[in-house]
Amino acid sequence: MSEMKSFWIKRKSGDRLFYALNYIFLLFLAVVILYPLYFIVIAAISDPDAVLAGEVVLYPVGVTLSGFQKILERTDVWQGYWNTIVYTVLTVILSLVVTIPAGWALSRKTLVGRKALMIYFIIPMFFGGGLIPFYNVVSSLHLVNTIWAVILPSILSVWNLFMTRTFFESSISENLVEAARIDGAGEFRIFFSLILPLSKAILAVMALYYAVGQWNSYFNAMIFLQDESLYPLQLVLKEILIASESTMGGSGETILEQYRLANQIKYVSVIVSSAPVILLYPFVQKYFAQGVMIGSLKG
Image (cartoon, rainbow, N blue to C red; front, top):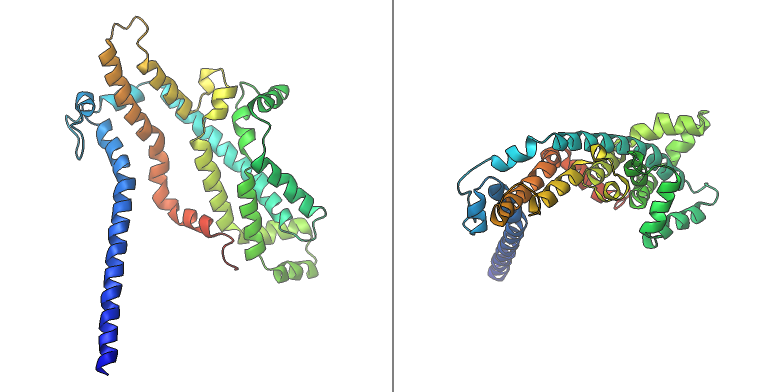
């Protein structure tokens, strides 16, 4: 009996050591991940000279909101915000219209040419034509310098399509679909009246993934848009940062002053562009976790 008791005491001691090491490791990871974000915040509200001198480490020095004032008083920033919202909303709507029905179709084993379609979608995941053919296609469709050059290339992600297909395969029972057919429901009735109400999780996850992707995107806009009034927020902030780093022009500012301004705007731009997504994240965190787990377990 005493040997058994000694065994459990040793095991509990080993468990405590294991959990303690885990907590220390996770705390270290949390610091490594969170400190850069924290530094961006305190640097954005600190005196630029203090940031450049390395005095800003754990707390803000010489608190000032002049960087935010310089950014937010510009009309092109607000226009960029509006453009990004429009692009994101339209992308999410069109993406759901395309991805959800396509994922449902690919999840049906009775779909003619299902394997060929799967291969067709897989190939672009590994091979692309490159930027020049991509530009030629968009140009031939007369989409250059229009909002559709930003939206249409983003409405279908093959990875999201496969995730949607996996959700339907693992979460929608074939018996349920067969029962609806026996009751006389057609394919459209089954999809809109049965499948969509049971697919709120994947709808939320896909809307979230497409929204975050479009909100952070700037490359297509940089390639296809020439009209600055159509620029999304990310591209507007990029142009502001480049302009602030330039020492050319008749402003009369010294190189040091320009560098101070560029350094301050750099941190402020990160906050201005990321704040909406960061503020939204606590409310949709469960959908991110659910999206990662989709298809990992049979429903």
